[in-house]
Length: 144
Image 1 (spheres, helix red, strand yellow):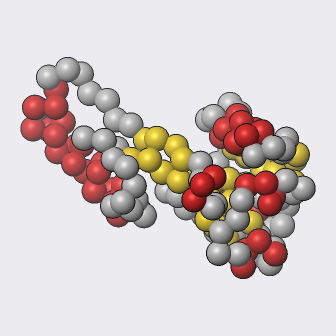
Image 2 (cartoon, rainbow, N blue to C red; image 1 turned 90 degrees about the vertical axis):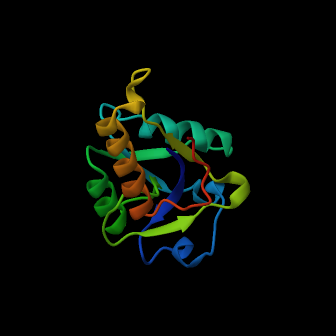
């Protein structure tokens, strides 16, 4: 469906909150908050992306919901990477510099031949509309 960028999530009073964009390694010395490893691949993804940026994140909290990640960051307990479609509270999303912007790919799958089913087609269109309505940008790469 789309390639969704990640943003650095920081407290509103953090120095990086005022930056137009940052490199991931600009947050190398920060405490990190991730989604609980049992809920999704976020913790692993943060570790891999940070390693590619040249550092190992100091993970101090793990949460089971995105809203909790937002709340922990918003209350100054660390920073995180957050997917664009994840919504939350009072923390600030800071774009990552274009050359270092990590993304996640959101896919849909249907059985061969099912796409011609009018109900499946309607569902796929609804998912596409919902993604667009929640901040998915038209210039993000999309698959057909």
